[in-house]
Length: 139
Image 1 (cartoon, helix red, strand yellow):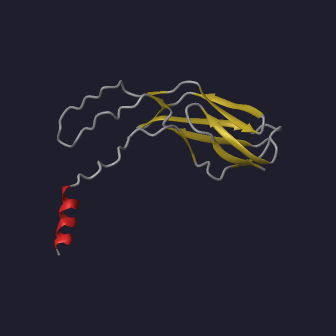
Image 2: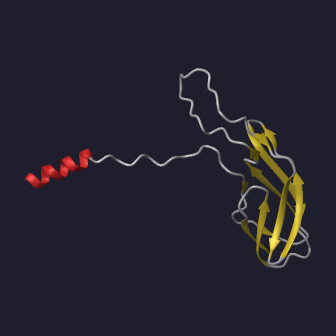
Image 3: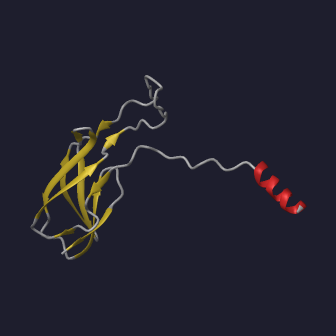
């Protein structure tokens, strides 16, 4: 019984670890390309989100706090965002577009391109400025 009480007291006295930190600003990403299969010569449209410079996630504003000030300048849409197709040792530029403010969605960008005839069946990656490459397939 004494050991049980001592164990419960030890657990109550030991400080718990703080919750993991979370950031509210997502990095750039492409939408709907998880199962994308490109065909050489065909036209495709790819959309991306969160293509912005800057992030205001260093200060939280609770409900009822009134005016909220951030330390960082407001995020701005990225200009000249390049989209590329990378396959083996080849890289093709698919297009360059400016991110904009579609409605309340800051940093949305759209590329429409024709898949290069030189792309071969198999694995490939779509690469855009500021984001991790996305694996896709060429048919």
